[in-house]
Image (cartoon, rainbow, N blue to C red):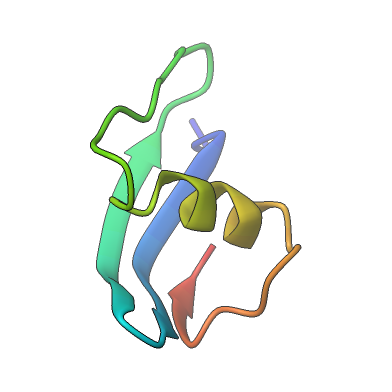
Length: 60
């Protein structure tokens, strides 16, 4: 079965912050939450998935 979402090596650099090679697979029918401290990269990851920001490297 094809995954609902697959991220491989997602990287985005900002001054003072780097989202560094994030990878995960979300199978169809699965519910997932992104949990982490402030500044961990949760919003950056979601914005890259939604194509609201340009990623520096990786595949979505």
